[in-house]
Each structure stands twice: as C-alpha cells, then as structure tokens.
Image (cartoon, rainbow, N blue to C red; front, side, top):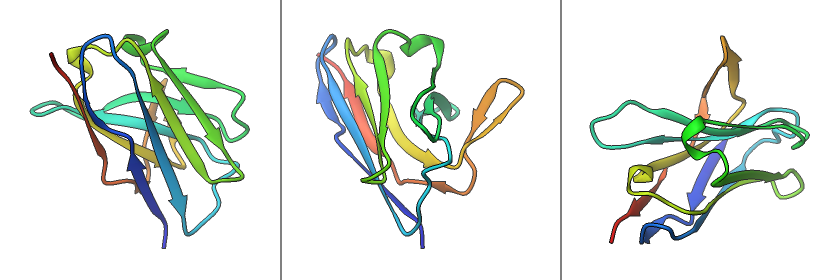
Length: 123
C-alpha cells in the first residue's frame, strides 16, 4: 500500500521560511514525477511545483517562482519543498503527490497523494 506523509507545515510570519517534506512508502517512484499541490479554504486545488524522476527538471506555478524550490532524494523516497519569502496568499493545505500527469501544460495528480500539512502565513 502506497503512503505519502507530509511534514513541516506550521505558522510563520510574512517573509519567513518553511521546509515541507514528504516521505513515500510502499513502492518506489524513482522514474516518476513528484510534486506539490495546495488548497486554500474555499478555493480549488492548485499546482505548486513538480520535479522529474531524475530530479534534473523542476516546474513551478508563476506565483512561487523564485521563492520556492522543490527537490527530491530517490534513495530516501522523499520530496521536499523549500518555501522562502512566504506571503499570506501562500496559506493553504499542502499535499505532495507522486506519479503526476502532465497534460496540456498542466500538472495533475493521479492516484497517490498525502493527507496534507497546513501552512499558515500570518502576522
């Protein structure tokens, strides 16, 4: 059974940083894209970042470019999201996902994603 467990969320002031981590168990996804999505209250799920299986190419939604960095460690079956210069509009539940689909210029999760970790940016 595949499980994804996120950690690292919390409350941070605007301009601060957080690092989210996601541990995958139950199967190896070394050749599959991994990524992060987020959902704020009352809003649709939003793509945040994705990284290819080799870890050599990363993709970001425009609103986080230059502030967030996605990385992965295939030996540890983990993906991380370093978030800097956080803004109140980054407040959401962040979910990691594996085996993403890229279609029409948009990343989608498939069957595997975690329960999420809350990120709140507020003074």
